[in-house]
Length: 109
Image (cartoon, rainbow, N blue to C red; front, side, top):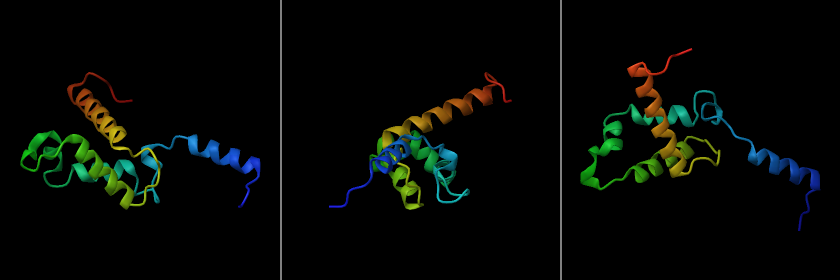
């Protein structure tokens, strides 16, 4: 069995705990979790699906979040934060921020 030196194991553990921003976690600057998610929402009826417009297929938000998560992985993003619950929370936060900017309740700096 191959034994790795302790320092290499510690470095790998530290690297695994580092948070990577959604905008920089992809294989290229153009492909990352954020761009894939925005592309998905701006395609055809996807935003409507997210808000219950796909009831004929009995698709829940968690099911859609899982679908988006799979697409993100297929695009080459390997960051382990792509659980469907985390993606669901991120989408909700983005929507809240968008509404706040749209209504003027927060300012842009």
